[in-house]
Amino acid sequence: MQTYDIVIIGGGPAGLAAAIAAKESGIDRILILERSERAGGILNQCIHNGFGLHTFHEELTGPEYADRFIRQAESLGIECRLRTMAVDIAAGEAAPVHTVTAVSSTDGLVQICARSVILAMGCRERPRGALNIPGFRPAGIFSAGTAQRLVNMDGYMPGREVVILGSGDIGLIMARRMTLEGAKVHAVAEIMPYSGGLKRNIVQCLDDYGIPLLLSHTVTWIHGKDRVEGVTLSQVDENRRPIPGTEQFYPCDTLLLSVGLIPENELSRGMGVTLSPATSGPLVNESLETDIPGVFACGNVLHVHDLVDYVSEEASAAGRHAADYVKHLGDKSAGTPFPMISPASKRRIPSSSERGIPLTAEHGIRYTVPAFIRPERMPSKLTIRFRVTDVYRNCRVCVCFDDIPVKKKARRIVAPGEMEEIRLERELFERHPVPKTIRFSLETQNDEDTQDFKEGR
Image (cartoon, rainbow, N blue to C red):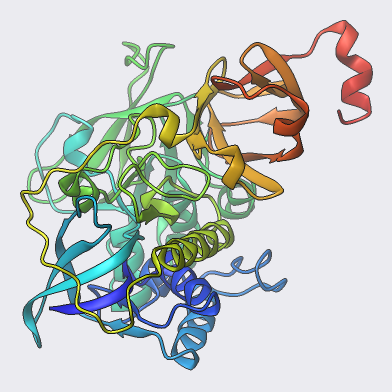
């Protein structure tokens, strides 16, 4: 039985940043498990620039951004096992020890004991099967991420006449990439009345190349039996149902799907981590710790991010918190074997008071990360990230302790495609009675608030 202080599942940008932060916090026995042949995750196929502006204050491509973290991890002597897939994690009982079962072509099946586990598996794309699009199943239908790998890493062109369904960031970026490679992108269709991607990607990837973005449209039929020959696009109403008489045929040989990302949480669910119905990622507290002690989550496995810089920032925090957790355990001497953990063992679910004060998303807020706060353990300033349910203009993010407003932040415009954040100061809990719940909501502008908006309050 191999033993480590921290085992990190996933060697992408989240896993690497978490490992580096934990190492710099004084933890030596760290192991990264990565199923691919190279660390860096999805960044290895993202050859466009725009990465690193927040982290390194310069513009990098995806592989360049990943390489900086890979080199830093190597210089710190962090062990990373490539082509190794974690297939199961058994949560410990009262003794905070977890058993990770992994498999690789070189070591076969191995079990690893860890005082702490950091979940950093990333996310996957939603497939065609989740969309219920009528028609045959011809060749030429790809997820946007698969097409990106084919073009950028394998040197294959999926097709020459393209329609893209969904306006997520990967789809927008692939509209530009396919155009640069000589393909004709006829349209990007989005079922919602707003885009699911960043505004800058709409401008740089669609507007700059004359590619139309058709909002409130979806694919209602895929033509072709052996190969895609075209698609029918239809307008949809406010209930996202196709409007009869609005059908329009677009000839194409390729349909790319960019219809959402899903956090990769099969391992989390298998070990008993409670998942959020809004994000499909774990519910975590201010330390990014799940409801299983010693198990932390960060990056896109927690919730889907806009920028990899935010993934790295969040993962670094998870690494530091995991290191603090291991140090707190601290009565085990280095090298002492941990006891075997039975996969069938039962764990005690912490009570609500142990988990912390719940954060409630309402009135325009879809979710918040974290979902719980323990005021006595939070830093002087805690970043709360969230997404909204619709496009709102001239609004304020309102934070209430129960029914008492304690903080408001003015926003000219918010949209579901862009992640928002607000910082809570620890002193708020010193100035106000400790609440039973912390409520996050949106307030729309009214006349008496005009001056507040002008002054940015």
